[in-house]
Length: 215
Image (cartoon, rainbow, N blue to C red; front, side, top):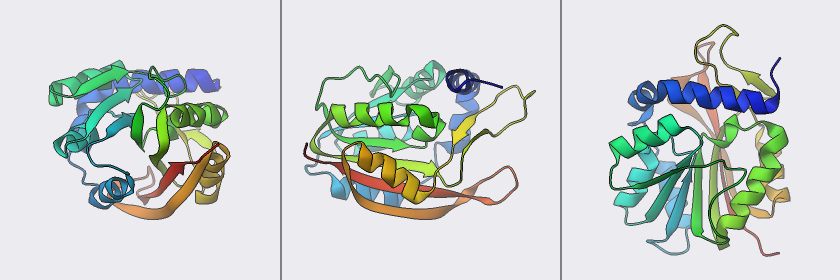
């Protein structure tokens, strides 16, 4: 039995070991509607975006090409190194979303696609408070998590790489984000056409867009 902190550490070690193969599988997965909605919600074009849990830098690179100023952040050093290799002109840092190394109000938008879902639920509130802190007034947050319940490992105990997931219902996620001081703008679900659950069923993603609310 692993503690929540050890579960996160083992997940990060697994990403360190598999960064290159993960990038090969996911770098070209398109997210046109999610990205377009995010850019539509952003108040001003060309603003500062934090790609939180950037992985190999796919979305960091995309938003940079749209003339945004983007910083990619990931707790996995292996992912940060892979991102730097794939997008050498972009800015990447190793960072924990529960303690972000940025000043208050640094970003107009935070893009957190498939990253918050690895954080044990007991730390969710702390991470959301940090996201709100580094967002500018009326800043936009995007989050994508997998639909489900509870928290669990995806791989068996003896697997070489193991990944811990916190699954959410849409109303549960919206509740946590709202309690952290955000106004929910949009909440939807979609089934992936390429990603599968261990049982072979398609992954169902919850897509949330929110705005930093006034105190």
